[in-house]
Image 1 (cartoon, rainbow, N blue to C red):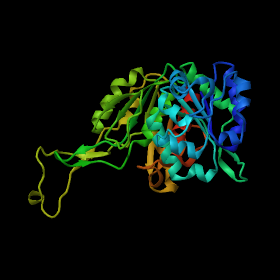
Image 2 (spheres, rainbow, N blue to C red):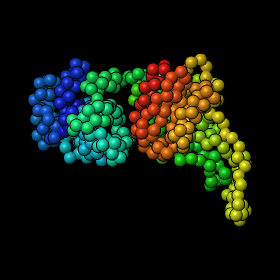
Image 3 (cartoon, one colour):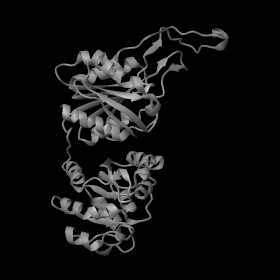
Image 4 (cartoon, rainbow, N blue to C red):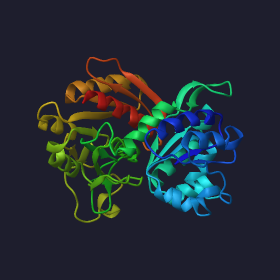
Length: 392
């Protein structure tokens, strides 16, 4: 199924339909606005299949087209995907044929956004897209930067039909660039108990780890997500290992490391834990007006994983976090040298911790640092995995 929505980039959709038709039977479903840009007969001629345009006048497909056609689909592509479409799909709206079909399908959905740069960057669009990705097997392609139809320049152009076609073929064939690989992702905070009701922890939400796990899964990898207590839902189709303390996370990762090809250490582990843990709640009457905790260092999970590595695999990616932008790159370089991993992602706490977007710098040996963002964490995760693919 190829969904076409009402944006100027709809003029590229016939070229995409032609490419897809070389490998599969293609059925096009158009919104009312899409028909203002491209005629249904164009798609009928290219695909040899009647283009579906209206919930109440589906043509030869019959009155239950939204059930039968969508239920039989192996893949759903929406290109272009406007901001309005993303909002309606995230809300589960079924007030047109395309929306109803998306509620029926259980096939992977490739979404190729196209819109003005400010529409793309708007928090509502990013929120809707993040929600849509939790509700369906959504694979994002683009948008890309360039000159826009409105006369502005920036991120918002629909990806080229050839790029969308290549991603669609990967999904149709059931593979991807990481097919056959095992990827371990650590995510979220850890908690170090003080007593039965208090813990030492941090503000990590687990969004970056979730994005990395989902991206790796979408690229064909077998994914093991080792996570602490997080604020986001687990991605579908990955193995989840629940931990709380830094020691539990360290043991869980080391146990699974021998069979891994990639280790992405996105978790924000606690650096210290109380030297002693009370078995009962510590009360104010017992601790007084001032209370001091004796803290000791937790396990250095990254160093232990690098030390346990046998040969060139797994590729190990570490993360560092700084609050001072001027120190971020230097801290990432220092961590790269000290830990001996393959890549360090330097993160700014002010932009990344707990939020949907971040600003990072990729630091690797014998390479210039690569700055990314501010950008959605899904995009940053994709850039990190692009680096991993080239490395392995």
